[in-house]
Length: 140
Image (tube, rainbow, N blue to C red):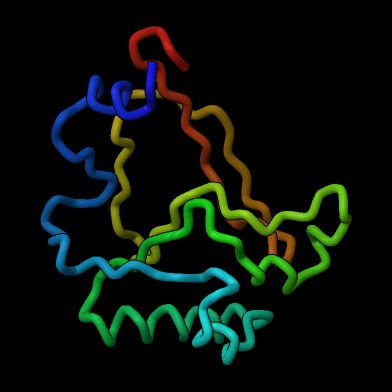
């Protein structure tokens, strides 16, 4: 089954992971790829500076949510030695990030179960991570 067909079989309406009260106009797409010239001016080794960069983009766009990331080539992963082993090097982002205020409720778009969770505390690591597993039409 093609991905598009599969996704349409789940719902023809958008599946929300944040409150529907947050309007689409309050989202801003964020580019953390190594092609982003503005990001090259930021000390990405500092979580504070990177956070300030993201918050500035949100403020400039009157956004509550900054989002982005899937399949971006991210040079920021080189900011720490955590993934410096050439066999484990990572620079392709395989998720979708949402930068929102702390304590904002997040919803699973489909019923599922917690596959795993961990607070990855190493500098440059994933941070708090929850992986959900969903089964739709007997497909996990």
